[in-house]
Picture 1 (spheres, one colour):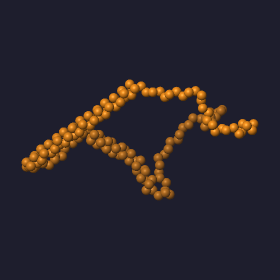
Picture 2: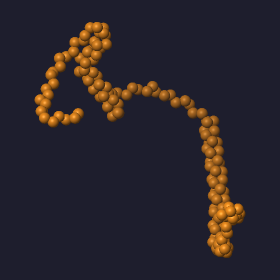
Picture 3: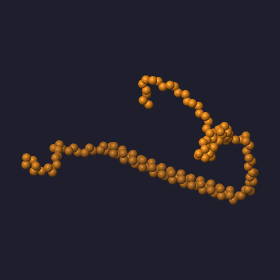
Picture 4: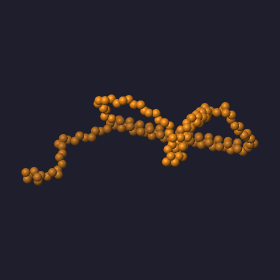
Length: 154
């Protein structure tokens, strides 16, 4: 037992099986990958060149249009007299405008018919707290007689 406790435990256990060499890559695949990468790089460069050419053409076109506008601005036309806008008659309203007018009218009619309720609420607000407000008589609620026997738990 004393020998087991004094044994050196810092040594690392190693396998006796020989380590296989790392698997080598297929040289044909590596070469194909490099060719693809080169083609992509060349395509990007061509695309950048075409983009630069297109931007140059667009800049020349903008410059040409600006020069034409400047030439047209030199030849000043007499100012055009604008007529005062006329008001549109009611017949030229859009569908949305007609619907909004109809909804306003319906709202006003609803308020007209509910004026009694509105008068009652205003009377409640204006009435002092100690004077009771006259409320409409309530009808008695009719209920069925309770069944005798086992009662529900609610």
